[in-house]
Image 1: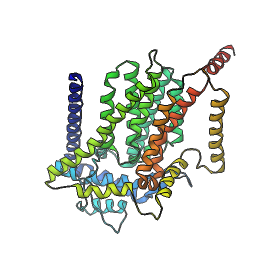
Image 2: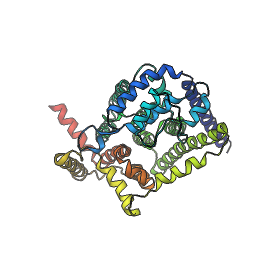
Image 3: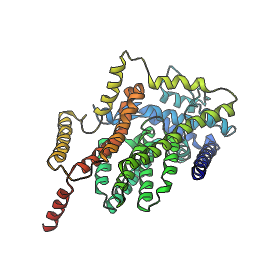
Image 4: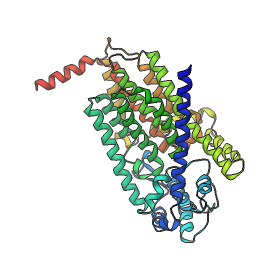
Length: 434
């Protein structure tokens, strides 16, 4: 009992310290004078005005849509931070808004005519401004997108490189296929898509260090902080990625240990980390609303409750079954290569048939398949999310579909368990002889 209490105190301390550090970082970037970023925000506004708010980078492919609407709001909030009232301004996260104009035009008006913020967006942390606002001192968003692509590319190569070096070839295949099927090459060109994708890779690299260095006692803290960082940076996009993908990697690592846990032990391990991630994620929401109420001296919940209902429900003229099924199928349809015309659909079907073929023809009767159940449960998490937040998933399927990265990875791991390992060994022997 004493150990549990001590562990609980440590989790609370980590949570409180993390909240304090993240808030201080936001307040710190708010102290950057507006004049320092004005020129690059103006250049960014020009870029947004000259380009579509929602643009299909590949014609007819919804999964290639770049969302500049949310990005424009993020830049508008970054621009309106007040160095004279830094705490209040980061809490309110206000920006200039005119109902009669698009947000790109509103941003241009705010900068060119020096209009003050008139609409708050306090329900989110908008923590990505910790990165974006300092970069706006030196670069426009068009240039930051290029930097973004380089950073995410390096992270992907690093993650796959570490897995290959450790001969974790199943994970190499799963991560690589996941990046392809979620059109990872589109991600860097929208800030909205970037943060969870980048955090997923960062946390995956971190848990690899935990697994290979046998530091399992730190796993809970990693998932707690991962949930907190996800809420801090994300704009409600593919938030589950930062939990599901690192967790799948950890399960695979544990399954390849000499003293691998039983299925029950693995479910307990996974449930604990999912719970801690959820506590971190939900705790950051609550922290923001509590801090906002204290700083602003008012009850902010009326700003929040309506938007929660909007994400869960909605009024698109659909019955609940159509709503939920539509949310799931629209997200599934965006996976690469299904949207790329007849050839893409045929290629996608061939990949599915090939997976079933491998699992059936090379089925390993003697292999331990117990972990299939836990991989299956984690693979379903994105669809549970789509069904619960069905209005959001139905409308924003063109980016929420990337949460299925975890499903793709889980399918690859399941396929490995279904397949006779001796088939791999024979293939390896043949390659040596040739």
